[in-house]
Image (tube, rainbow, N blue to C red; front, side, top):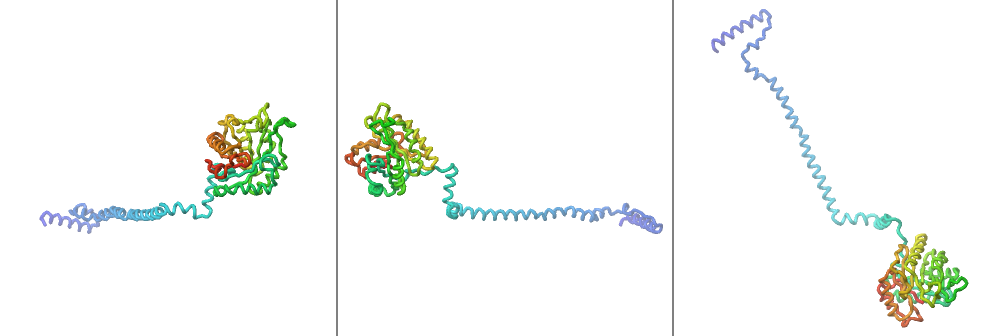
Length: 377
């Protein structure tokens, strides 16, 4: 210890003793040389610093971020299994079959729903997938095969005529029909000057009931003579409203004021056919049954403005290659009409007594397309 230090220490010791004796409070630390310990003894500051630094440990415990790694693995496994099973079924087996076959009847229910989305479904076609074989005439003797025999005999003969067509095309549903002329053209004017007469509804009804009872249809044929076509149609409207009853118009016997049916060749226009179709379409809509309209033709002069013919949704327009003669003429007419306006379905008429030779069912079915309506007279 240096002399100066010893001297200072002695002075301080004397002052300290004096202070004790006198009871005086002296701030010794101010004179105390250990300022170094002050910085060393900043243990107060060290703990404070340590405590302030403790936030670092608090940040370290933010292993709350460590759970984040735990969160990261959690989604990863969850996503992986979710995608895995979904991808496996979706490819092909599970996804398509599951909705349709799983629930009973679900496949069938899907179709009606799509139909209904466009509005009420129209009544089914009377012709699609079917072939109609008809006997032609009146309900009394004198015209065609109808009326020559009683109803049971007529039905039996018709069934025999249908059999070869059944064998030639077993896929088509065969439908028997009575093609009944209800307004018959005459060579004389009659009481009303219309050059026609009308069959009584009572006898027509009997034949309608007989054919529809065996699953067949009736086609009511109008030969207007000099009469107004729409007037003649209105007279049979109550019958046309019956299920399974349809319409035919024969232009051959629609003549002008100075003409006579059978002497002069009659005719009809495309506009007149449209008028009849529109009228019949309204009936079809009201009774909820599509109706057939047969138009006979065997000569180009029977039709005026054929291109004007329009399509009506509930009317199945049937073009019948009429007229008697050899097969060549009939086939030629059929092939011509199928390329012209108004041909929705093909028909052909066969005359037992006037065709030479009579076309066989095989000849008829060789037509393209095969006729959907075949009438025997």
